[in-house]
Image 1 (cartoon, rainbow, N blue to C red):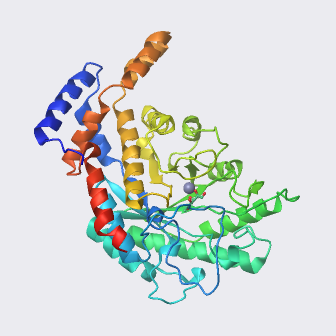
Image 2: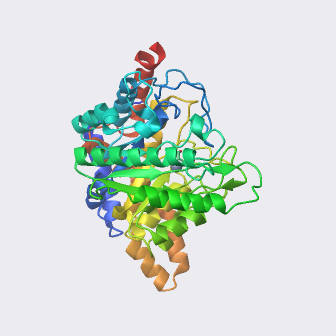
Image 3: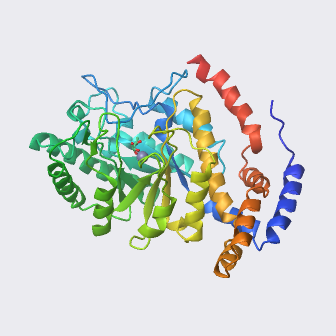
Length: 425
Ligand code: RNT
Ligand code: ZN
């Protein structure tokens, strides 16, 4: 349906674009080399609407997040999820990592408590990661569990429940360390704790104090930092925790500034019109590493598939302009169950990488000179003109180099996989 360009066509278009960018002092070859080096962590949970494969003996739900949509054929076991992820990966150019949650453990049909999880339950994932040369990242799962049903986990007032979750997180960091050792680079562990209240808790302090103490306990474990690096993710509100989230932005900003763990900024975790790009230069005044959850909130923290909108463009422009790109771990966090899930993965990841490329192609020095000389109109004019510069031709070259369909050509592969695999499930 979508005509593929020939190699010659892609090269010809690239050469024109290259000359056009060169006139602004931008080296497109160098930008492509840099883009090649930036890994994006593909989140496993787009493949199955954050369900996981845990064997439960009771009903579970909650955690303040919810995937919506009934598109057919979500992955229902780990081999299927790996197969779908491989399909998506084959349509995404450049380096990827793969991001797992504890609920994606493979326990051979056994009920294994979250406080009992161990590296062996992720052995198949680790083998797969090694075979594919894709490093793993990891997340403890503090939701969809009977012990999370009243909305509190690590900050719970009950000592036993809190202890259970502390132990769960400790297991997860040991699993991450094993993953890191297996892949020869640190596994990034993101700690997102959904705890909060629907309506006006009178005591907003005690849960926060308990959360600090629980985190101190968890991070006191001797885990090799060469193989496991931790981040803490803030949030404004969730479904069922509209009024109060223990781990708010101020909470984790304070925590990260006084501890060595990274801050994780999720694009959907702020007030509906609040964006994160202006936060980066502030954070990097005090921290030297960051984790991002690249997402798209539509009116709320809805986790829509990422597209190349202004938020994404501004985000990566700030990272590149500040020299923060190599200090930022880029992970994706969206889940849409209403459309082809492989398509969702590919759309969001390609958009993210296009955002990075767009920033790498900016003639930043020229713009800065205009700014420093007080040439505001020149700066604004060039920023506007750049929006229609041929970034797409450079992107297509990136696809060609990585042996991935350029332009819209990948859509045909998505449709074929949908027909041959997904619809037959
Ligand atoms: C939830 C957080 C969190 C989750 C994943 C599944 O609001 O963004 O990062 O989406 O851990
Ligand atoms: Zn997130």
